[in-house]
Length: 232
Image (cartoon, rainbow, N blue to C red; front, side, top):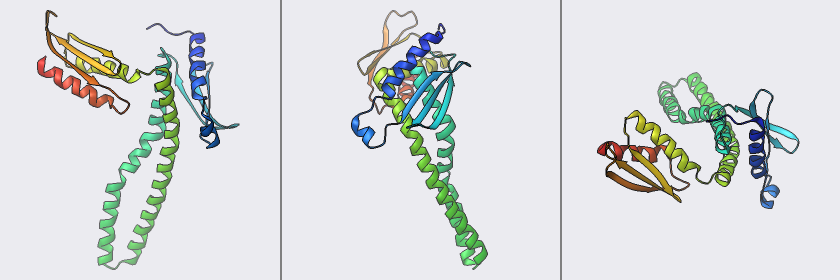
């Protein structure tokens, strides 16, 4: 893969920026029209500033080294938000069920022993946990607004990006299992998978899978690989 010139990257950023900042009137009136300022920094990082009028709400940057097109830029920022803002918050939220179960068990124990000091301390912990949970839930929703916008632009500029992702991940998985002579093509939103014998003289298996906006890449890849392993 040849490395893009600074000029080519800047042209891609202009293309992305045009769609990112193209809002419907109702979105502007509802206050949903965040501004996105994209630029290539002197250190070769691609920076995205998310603006609320003149105020910079958030800044993120990704390296430009492996950028080959619009998809890499948008997926780069999506991954950045998940890795830096979403995942650790979701980790805390997912741990709530076990945390509350332990606290309720302790609370029941100290109620039975009529230990008011312990009860008050646990109630305070639960109250703090609830406040933190609501704050993190709101923050996750806040950052997901930006992720949603990035996916919107990705769908606009690279309508078949999910098909490309599925193909890429599938071939990586097939390589791990040393499954060869597989071809994957697509017609519209339909993936067509074919597996040939060792000398490619005939087709062992052929099937297709419909892909839509709700399709999960990992689930689809697992379906393909699982079936091909049975005939490999």
